[in-house]
Every structure is written in structure tokens, then in C-alpha cells.
Length: 113
Image 1 (cartoon, rainbow, N blue to C red):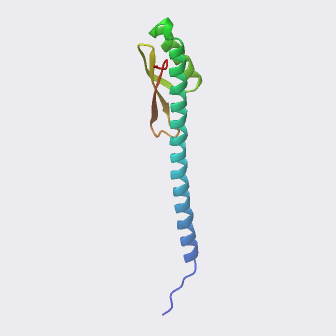
Image 2 (cartoon, rainbow, N blue to C red):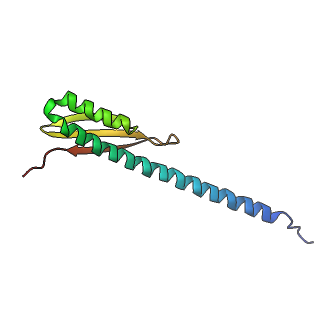
């Protein structure tokens, strides 16, 4: 008795396409996380610099300045404080696709000599 193999290539091709789509989706998700992490890190750096530049006006003014920076960069300011003349900032950015948040910390202030 001979087996009929007609249509088996279609099943294998469908499986291969599904596997490729799964790998592509995983790579896209990973790329989204990496890009969002970099965006959060950049925003934290710039916000800390902005806050440190306004540290002479007090914590409230410095953190307001940091808040303006992160708002323009479409991230969320989690915390902001001054430690002497150093500004310490934490931000979070939502990863597209509901994969959570990417957070970053930054510190800026005068150079110690």
C-alpha cells in the first residue's frame, strides 16, 4: 500500500512561515525594549543636566526643569532630588506593546576637583 503525500509540502511550508513570523515578532519586541531603554536613558541624562543647571534655585525649580525635559521626551519622571549640588533623576518609559516600562537613573552635578 502506497501513502499519498500530496499536500504535505503545504503543511511544512505553513509551519516554516509560522516559525519565521514568531522569530520576527520576538526580534521586534526585543528591539522595542532596547530602543525604549535608550530613550529612557537619554531622557534621564538630559533631565539630570537640566536639574543640575537649575540647582542654585532649589529643589523645586530644579525638578520642575527636569520635568519639562522628560515631558518633551515622552517619558515619565519617577523621582527627582538634589544631593548637595548633584541632581539625581529617575525616569520610566512605556515599552510599546504593553511589555512594561524601561527605567533609567542619572546623576549630574559639578565636577569634583
